[in-house]
Length: 307
Ligand SMILES: [Mg+2]
Image (cartoon, rainbow, N blue to C red):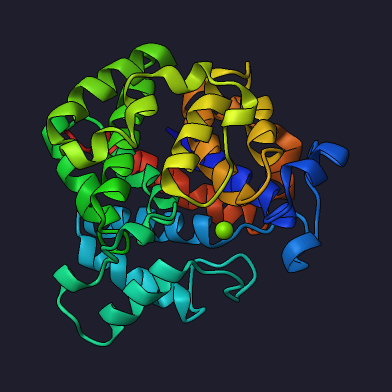
């Protein structure tokens, strides 16, 4: 489980300097390890909003257990620059996430926080769901789905984003038990099936039938669209033998490099374990001790829970 959480943060940090680069630009100058500066001119090892929101979720679970409004309160604390940042400042935030946090801050009821339109299906909830996935991993599949959809819905309340989060949680629940990825995908898909409305079936088809892992690289996108992000993460993790190779492949797809690498990093980290994360990448991580301690505390809390 530690590999999953740290794997996400490390992947995010590796992707930050080249966010928005195209695949063509990256194929001419591929990322092979830790870099600095670039898109946001941040020092090497700087992680972004993806990890900030993931760490805020983890901290909420450590202190309050399953309490989605408490998660949202912590997201607001982050957006104000008061916590969960690598260097004390927020340098990136997604549009849907920002508007949802603003509705929360202005006192709207929880049912109105998350964005609901089909255009609001960015990867902003998928990138922060892993702590919740681990926290709920031992629950019945229907409960994992319910909690994942609710936590996605804090910011991303369209069924497509919610279903991608639910699938990812069901998948991680299998992977952290040691199931091979292909088997975990089949199980997650079967468990999610009763919750998939007809309107979402086609757009999620390549994930649900597992065919996405056989797709050619040219069919995989690293965009900020939640379906592209989940497809890319499955593809990168399935077609590369190590954490390191999967995360670099995710970054070198281009576009939303930090988030594709964060989600891929969570999955590949869960598959290969903490020891598979290159020590040099961990060493470069901004506020490494803070990140590691927080992730360790969540894992300890989950392991202590008799659930
Ligand atoms: Mg980011």
